[in-house]
Amino acid sequence: MSKSDTRVVVAMSGGVDSSVAAALLVRDGYDVIGMMMRLWSDEALGGAEHNRCCTPDQMIVARTVADKLGIPFYVLDSKEVFRDTVVQYFIDQHREGFTPNPCLECNRHIRFDWLLRHAIALDADYLATGHYARIADDPAGKRLLMKGLDPNKDQSYVLSVMGQQQLAKTRFPVGEYPKAEVRRIAIELGLDLANRKDSQDLCFLGNRDYRDFLGAHAPDLMIKGPIVTTAGAVLGEHRGLSNYTIGQRKGLGISHHEPLYVLAMNPFKNALVVGARSELGRDQLIAERFNWISGAPPVAAFRAEVKIRYRSQPQGALIQPMDGGQARVVFDEPQRDITPGQAAVAYRGDVCLGGGVIAKFDDAQDHLEPEDQLAQFTA
Image (cartoon, rainbow, N blue to C red; front, side, top):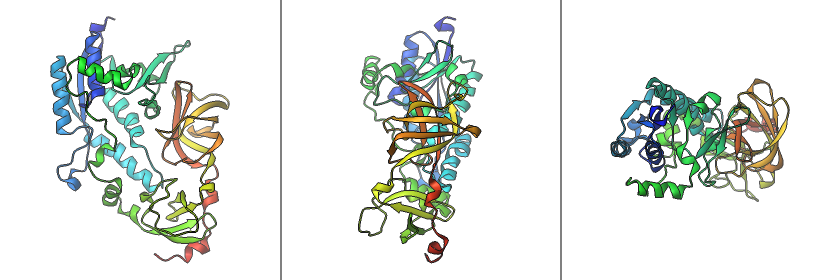
């Protein structure tokens, strides 16, 4: 099939990456269609707030870029499905005492499911996005998800939810370029957005802090409770578990003879567990909903490098596939910031093998507090 007969729907956001992705595909002769999703945001709380991924200004920019490139442009109303999946997941995970990464769920359910299905409905052969990642084939014919060429912009971590079917229908045009080159291409193509800033925060929050959002939509998450040590000593009162994350030191509101850090959260007892820095590191975790990009888990434990946060460095570890879509990750060295709700993503060099949501430390039950200590606490 020739490029002119190959239709590609580009997920456009009005940003430089997706705009250059569309421009590169047009330049290469593909039949390109631009599509932008209108995503949910809580406008009732923020007045005129909009989802940061699809503000009116961004829609105007995306449509202007599409006009300049001479391609059709459509807006897909995705508010309801986004609210029911990504936003509800964000709330539910906090209710479990986790610190979620909604971008993973957005890629799992919205971009590479909901949007991909709409692209296929337009007779598209591929969906393209502005992600910094690459797709290759291995000798056995399997699709490989690989890190983007620019190590500072690589987004394979949040794409670790993809499988063979999604990769077969996806293209990442800017993944072969460093960010500086993408901006240069934008200038070369006359796209007046080379200096637009990258989006950083959770898109559906508008200009609000996530704590304000949770307080409005899940006030039960802001119920005060005890701050306790691993030995069960009550040191004070927290302001609601969702105000904290693993490794946090500042803002605990308690005095102690040494600095204390958040070690864990116990939503069943509404207790925030703190301890010394020496107690913070863990050398293993259990990840659930582990997605193997190859399509099947390995038959035995194997060594790989694992990232536990989007911006963390990969660390050597032994990965043991488990029943029920789980995997145990045993690190060579203790990791300070293992955080339930974030993803543990496995790599072998530049190849992303897959990942799962961190469910617990393997020794998380060690943090359960004695009943008699908690019973004495009064809010």
